Image (tube, helix red, strand yellow):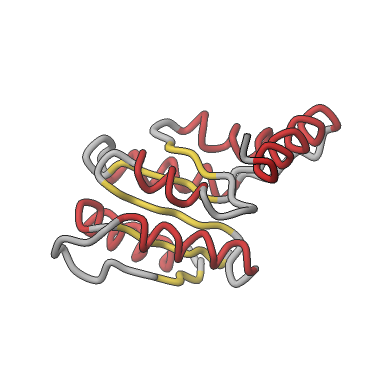
Length: 149
């Protein structure tokens, strides 16, 4: 799978580890930065990841910041993105299967590297179920996105 990966300074080291593990597992990684641990702003990398997903350049995206919250909020501002901060394996696959999650957000100051990897594996292995109830709910989410009210 082709995956876009981005972070701010707080998540730089976790991003680097995830990128290496993703490539070793056979995934193609589009790294949009940050490229060092110098202070940087999560909206920049989160938007770059989200835009890569929406454009179809990648199938899924992963954003990392200190808590995961800011990067998730920023990525979710791009129309067509369903982003969530995830810190457990169950939510990683459930959010894809039921909610169409396409951008995973991780908090580098919240989860360790092993749990982050398990979450990432679950996120990438999951597929949207396509069940009518989930399609109905996602149509309502899309309508909220259009109206922003």
